[in-house]
Each structure stands twice: as C-alpha cells, then as structure tokens.
Amino acid sequence: MTNSNASESFNLNISKSFLAWGILLIIASSYCILAFQADLRLSIATLTGASALIMVLLAIAVYLGETRDIGWSPRAIIIVAAAFRLMFLFRSPELSDDIYRYLWDGLTILHGNNPYAFAPSDAKPLAADLLSHVNHPHLITIYPPAAQIIFAIGAFLGGILGIKAVLVAADIAVCAIILRILSRMKMPPSRAVLYAWHPLPILEIAGSGHIDGAGILFLMLAFMLLIPRKNDPVFSSSNNGPASAVAGVAFSLAVLVKLFPLVFFPAFLFLAGRKGRGPFILGTVIGAAALSIPFLPGLYNMFTTLEIYVRNWEFAGFAFQSLHEMFPSDSTARQIITVTFLLIAATLYASLFRKRENPAADVYTPSLFPAAFKTAYCITLAFLLLTPTLHPWYALYLAFLLPFVPGIAGQVMTWAVLLSYRVLINFTLLGTWEEKDAIPAMIWAATVGTLVLSWLARRWSIYFYQHGKTSPSLSEMSGGRR
Image 1 (cartoon, rainbow, N blue to C red):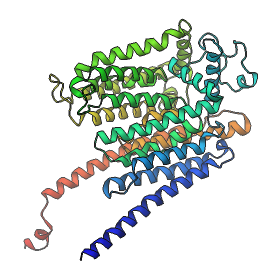
Image 2 (image 1 turned 90 degrees about the vertical axis):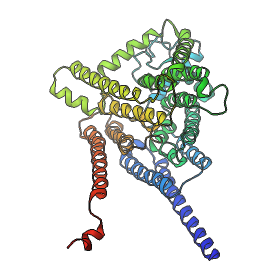
Image 3 (image 1 turned 45 degrees about the horizontal axis):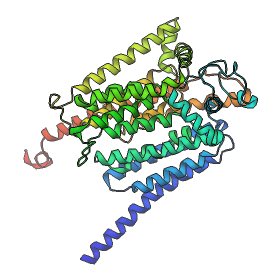
Image 4 (image 1 turned 135 degrees about the horizontal axis):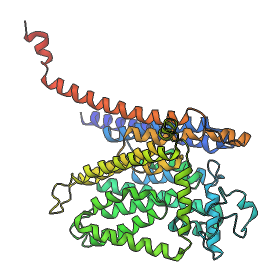
C-alpha cells in the first residue's frame, strides 16, 4: 500500500512538472516567434496573436498554481523573466520612437545643458542623425527630472542600448519586488507571472525602452516599504515613521519619472496610516525638491509642453472620440472625461478609507493592502478606459497590479491595447498616420464586455450558491416526497 501511494505521488509530481514546463515551453516559443520577426511594425497580427496566446496560458498557469499547486519557484520566475527580456533588449525600438527623445535629453545633460531650456530643434544639434529621429522636436521635453537622470545614466552607459539595459534591470527588480510583496501578503508566487512574463512589459520596456519601467520600480519600492514587517525595530508597523518617509522619497521618484503615479497618492496615505502620513508627505516633498531644484528655472517649460499634450493629444481613446462626436468642442469632451474620472477616483478612495477597522488606534489588518491594490487597479482601469490618449505602454501601470488583483478585465485591457499598433502598418509602408478604424472601439468593448461578464458571473454564482443552500436535496427530490 505504501509503495502504491508513493508511486501515485511520484506520477502526480511528474504530471504537474510536465504541465508546468509545457506551458512555459509554449510561452517561450511564442516569444521566440516575436523576437525573430524582421520588423514588428509589419507583424502586428503575429504580435497580437502570440500575445493573446501568452495571456491565456498565463491565466491558466495562475489558476493551476492556486488550485493544484502547479507552478514555478520564485527563482525560476525571475530567470525566465530575464531571459524573455533579453530576447528583445538588443532589437531596435520599432514600435515607438520615444527612446530617441530619451537619448537626446540624456546627451543634453551629459554635455552640461538643461534639457528644459530649449527644444531640440532650437538647440545646438548634438547629432543631426539623432535629431531626425526625435519626435516633436519643436517641443521642450515633457519628461520630469527623475526620468532625465535615468536618461543621462543610460546615455553614459551606451546610448539606446544603455538606456534599455537600465530599464530592463529596473523591470527585473520590479518582478523581484512583486514576489517579495506576494510572499508578505501570503499570496501564491505563481501570480507574479502575470507581470513577469506578460507581453506588455517585455515589449514596451525591453523592446521599446519606455521609461515607465523605472516609475513602476519606485512605486513598488514605496508599496513594499509600507508593508508592516515583524521583528524589525525600524520598519515595524508600530514605528512606521522611517519607513513612511523613505516610501515618500520612493514615491516622489516615481512621480518624477512619469506624473501618472500621482493618482495613487491617496492610496499611499491610506497605507501609511495616521502616524505615517506626515513622514510620507515630508519624504515626498524632500525627494521632489532635491530632484527638481537642479533643473530650475527651465523646469517650468515642461509644463508648457504638458499643457499642449493635455489639450491636443489623442490616440485610441474610444470614450473621448465618442464624446467628441456628440459635442463639437474638443475641450468640452476633455472636461467631461476629466470630471468623470475624478468622480470615479474620489468615490473609490472614499470607499477605501472607510475600510480601516480601527482608525483611532491605526490598527493594520491583512485586508488593507489587497483593498488598496484593488482600488488602485480600478482607478487605473477607469483612466485607461477614459483617457483621450491610450498608448499601449500606459497600461503598464495596470499590468504591475495584476499579480495582486488578477482581474480578467485588467488582463484583457493590457492585451487589447496592443491592437492599437495596427496604425503602424500604414505608417511604416506609406508614411501616413491614420486612425480611422474600429480598433479603439474594440479595445473598449473587449474590456467593458469582460467587466460586464465578470459581474454577471459573480451574480450568477451567488444566486446558485444561495439556491443550492435553500433548495430541497437530491434525495428529497427523488424519493423523499410522494
């Protein structure tokens, strides 16, 4: 009997290993197909198809990891994540040309100049060939000071490859921090693959070199610092001042890489607690001031470019496009979008702050961090559904939340945004940028449709659960009644 049980256990372990590594093999093969494409701009169908397959397999992997103990060790997850990123590190940035602006700004700093002082077209050319690749060269840079420092470090290390290498290193660190936070929150490590092996960060950070990867790293550091740690005299929940202050500095770095993380500010105040809010705000102010002062007074010019972006830019934003058709004024549609988003964010944050069980004692409970992550997830999803400008890399701020809130709608959105790259086909072949198709509607419908179906599934499951508890048993139905 003992030998039989041992044999069954051995066979079960073999089956689990075969399934886990079989899933990984298909995912790796899909990335290999993408990595060997001659030009991703002309392979959008392959890109979206392979990415869809990967997303389905990741969802299956997480399900098996939570229900049947089939998964990978944290070390394996990190090694595989690094390998996938290395496949795209040495490719030219095809899906976006933002990195050429990064390099220009970085070289400007290395030459001792302020990148906020002049637009590239007005400055003394650093390299004529590079200037021809910089998008919107007539505009002063829109990227905040922390991003500028990263650009300079990357440019010093080796131009475009140097910038991408720095950002890939940051992204791998994000994967490691996600695993650390999952461990502290007693969540399965298999959830980390929803970001670590997700096509979006691999394509947008390793492939295109988007600076958002660094911003997400600092956000994750801030979250990690606010998680109470037992047996730590400095960073315990009962003495959270130092941790909150350092978290505030990390948050300021995230905001000064990209401004979007500002929407998470109330979530951090919630997690810091009453005792930690003051130190957190102080750390944020000190960090922001230390990074911003060296770029003054030219830094104010960044806000001129930001205003132009907010007032005029649009891409793949279905909600905005629909409103714009209803209202002749472009600004009216943008104002409606802004007010709607602010109302949604305010409502969600108000609900979050009501969750603290004992505000007077500032008691932490295990539910606080999942609740904060879920609120951040919902707010980010709302932003992506409402924003007039929906570039695929914007969804990175949703992707990093998936391991903590593995919502199907978020998974669909972080894949569906890749459909917007269809515009690159005509742009590459004909030089025309035309966005006159149903892609924005498809992105929006896929995400909202998933939200509706998920809501209906929850309602049905509750109904059937309640119905099963109150309905007569099978024995009663078959023979208990005459």
